[in-house]
Amino acid sequence: MSSPYQRLLKPRQRSKKNIPSLARRSEPKRSKRRNFLRLPWAGLLAISVCCGVGYRQLATQFSEPQAIFVLGGSPDREKFAADLALKYPDLPLWVSSGSPEEYSYWVFDQAGVDRQRLHLDYRAVDTLTNFTTLVDDLKNRGITSVYLVTSDYHMRRAQWIAEIIGAQRGVIFKIVPIPTDRSTEPILKALRDSGRAIVWLVTGYTGVSLQNLEQTEESIKSKL
Image (cartoon, rainbow, N blue to C red; front, side):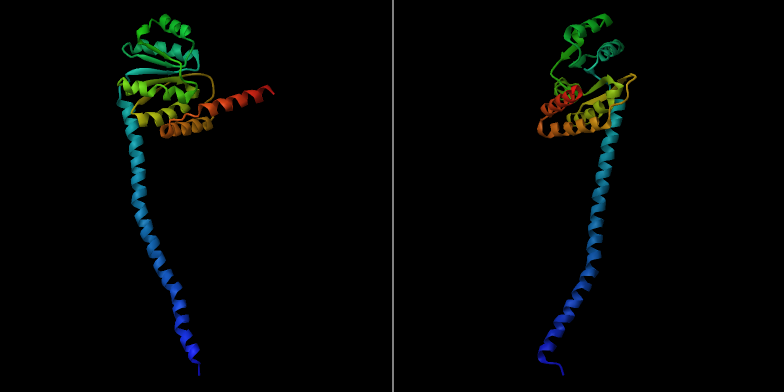
């Protein structure tokens, strides 16, 4: 015969054995419910992203630019923009940190572009600040669509920044690349400056001081 103590233990032992089996039966149901609840949200997110991208692409195709926006960095860009300005005589031009003022005016004067249409701005120190220093000025003037002029090797980085900042500020940038014989910039540059653009939207910080430090370090290493 079993002792009273052993009889008391048996129900407890049986209940412990039953607990894992109950847990195993209920876990798949919970996981299935969770997966079921996640699927619609994931689908809605994907649809929202696709719709946003599609809308921007359609808006870019059908919008009429109200200005020409030139990214500084090469005198060829101003010469190209001067020719483009002759095709669109009613559009004002903004040149962000381009050639020295006297040379820029000379280029546009030689092309026959009225100086009243020309706006030279020298606040930018890199590609990101080309956009951050002027996008709000354009928007405040009621300009929501512009031709974006820069060299083809630089266009990917400029376009990614333009998409990020333009989508948030409500400005559409229509790409006008200048053909060159240079290879496209490394994709890491585009990723880095795209990240900086997102940080600027959130914090207002462009990271220019860090960028200048990196450029200084690179120039020092090249001289060694």
